[in-house]
Amino acid sequence: MDRPRIVSPHRKRLKQAGYAGAGLALLLVTLGLSRLKPAAPSVDRSGVLVDTVKRGPMLREVRGLGTLVPEDIRWISATADGRVERIRVLAGTMVKADTVIVELSNPDLELQALDSESQARAAEASYKELQVRLKSQLLDQKASAARVQADFEQAKMQADTNGELARQGLIADLTRKLSDVAARELGNRNSIEQERLAIASEAVDAQLAAQRAILEQRQAEARLRRSQVVALAVKPGIAGMLQQVPVEQGQRVTVGTNLARVAVPDRLKAVIRVPETQAKDVQIGQTATVDTRNGVVTGKVSRIDPAAQNGTVTVDVALEGELPQGARPDLTVDGTIELERLTDIVYVGRPAQAQPGGTVGLFKLDPDGVGATRVKVGLGRSSVSTIEVTSGLQPGDQVVLSDTSAWDAYDRIRLK
Image 1 (cartoon, one colour):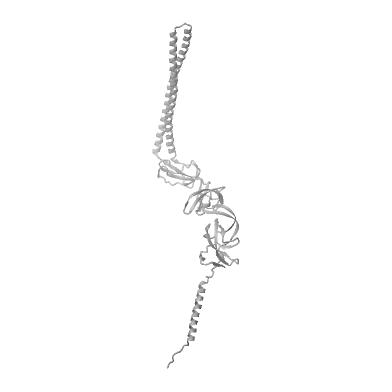
Image 2 (cartoon, rainbow, N blue to C red; image 1 turned 90 degrees about the vertical axis):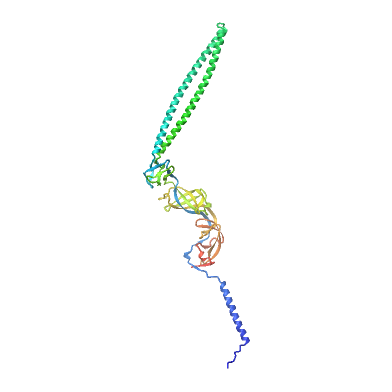
């Protein structure tokens, strides 16, 4: 017969206390492990870029891609409607100012030119006929005025003579009075004829001026029509490289249609596209360098586009000196613009994703160079490859410049 097992109360309490102690120990261990920081990851030193913080002068620059563009570009457009009869020169050919590029035809325009020239000749004949006729009329007027003036002079002398004879009692006083009246009458007629002569001269000038204006208008129309006919043989007007001929033989063109584009190849400028966030410091007159892959040429900023497009601002650089070998229009180039020279500042190589005036977390190397700790670094003005340090670092410190976003969860890394 089985006997019941009797458990001592004291022993039971000891056993419960043991269980409680073990649970508390497990809890403490778990809490301690949860508070432990993750182990610092190891990073291959050759795979990251490390730079040393420096104090001294820093050259601020901004860089952008661009192309070489001719300074002198001329689009030759049609001055009249016409039909493309012949394309005499193809794109890529050097042309002179008087080289005929495209030949157009317009029979109606040629007929209008002949009609305008005929009207101009008719107006010229009318002007000459009017000039001769008015000159003849003016001569008749002068002759009439001369006769009246001669009669007046004779009447005046006769009146003076009769006055002297009347004082001597040799003629009657009535005769003297009649001669005086005749002299005064001819004097009035002489004044009137002189005024008529002056008015006639002014009238001749006015009529000739009116007819001359008509003549000049007809001649201008004739010259315009003839110049349009001459312009059917399309010429560039400048010497350079023929870049485009955007028409085809047999095509109908209207006034203003672009027929060809000519550029002067030895007068180029660089058009650089600068990020809009950096364009605020670019000023006209700043020094720039342009790398054409075959050489570097210097220049000056000559124009800044007032508007941004696709996140960039267009900057024109006027090139100075001889262009490198192989420089040609539409060649892709690298442009660097010198903004300013800063003296006695703390700076470092520009970290990945660093923005001017912002704050970034960088791994600063320990003195032994094995470990690196993340520190907050204040940034100031920036250049192409360097940036000003305003806080968080001192000259001589070494920091990792590479992208460390893969280790954002860690405050320390180990370099191996």
